Amino acid sequence: MHIITISRQFGSGGRELGKRLADKMGYRYYDREIIAAIAQRSHLNSDYVENALETPVWQMPSPTFRHSFSSDSLFQTDQLNLLLEQRKVLEDIAAKGEDCVIVGRNADVILAEFHPLSLFVCASMEAKIQRCRERAQAGENLTDKQIQQKIKSIDKNRARVREMITGSAWGDPLAYHLTVNTSDWDIKSLTPAIADFAQRWFEKK
Image (tube, rainbow, N blue to C red; front, side):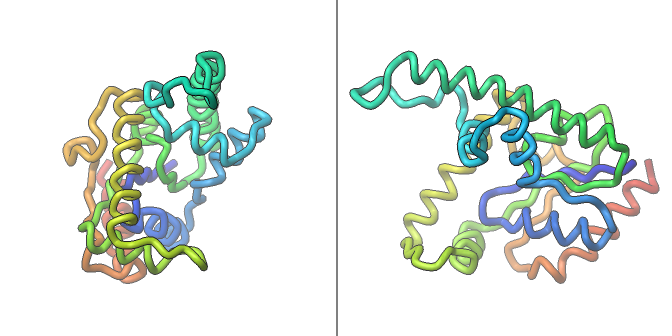
């Protein structure tokens, strides 16, 4: 069984690379399917699950007329339970014994015992802003400054969640087998080279 995990900066094209890589290598692909599985097991809305998993438990709103200690505590309890469910879902995926690509969810650390090939996908801020613009939904008219703020906020949360779950630094090049800078690349053109690297890496093991 071969597992490829992909951690990525927001807007770097890591999700697209993961999907194309899975298609190229004939692997199963897991991304939002993980959120859907967790939501089904927890009987919760998928959007709520995704938000809970991507918000560090200590980064909660201060109590106001809209928030109370009890509601914050309930959310934090949900977060911890969902993190446990996430681990179970990832372990269930690995237990199937299928070759697969898993995007996000700190799968490289959670599934370390299965010795996955771990990739980190990054890009320049200019490239990430451009990619976000190209993939924006109709009617989404954010300025470059607003997009940049969104990118930084999401990546900051990803770093904090990883630190909380794994104790390791998100984006540390020594924590991954390969760091891919997509700044000057078309993802479709880049995929064959990454697939070749992955194949050679698994053969070397």
